[in-house]
Image 1 (cartoon, rainbow, N blue to C red):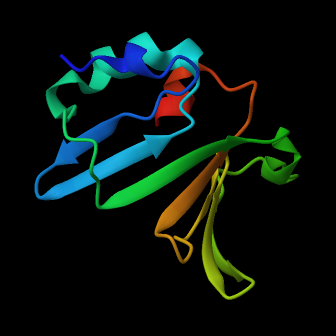
Image 2 (image 1 turned 180 degrees about the vertical axis):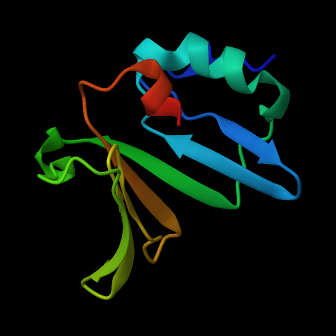
Length: 114
């Protein structure tokens, strides 16, 4: 098992999925134990990674949709691909190779990990 206690305020696990090592940055400490339990088979002890996904939280007004239908859209903002769903917004990787996944701070554990 990986010792995540080394960095008290940061929880940035690396998951190994096939040949790809993915770092999740800014995972809420509230979800640390659930994250470890859910993804224990994929946790990597190697701190190096190929791709990083930064988790950000914003008020959920960017998710509002008057139609009530499930939303999944692909668009472009400032030349970068953006995925917009009913429960998240994702931004294509920047120059440093970090993608951003935005979720609502009021979301529950299931939607947070989904």
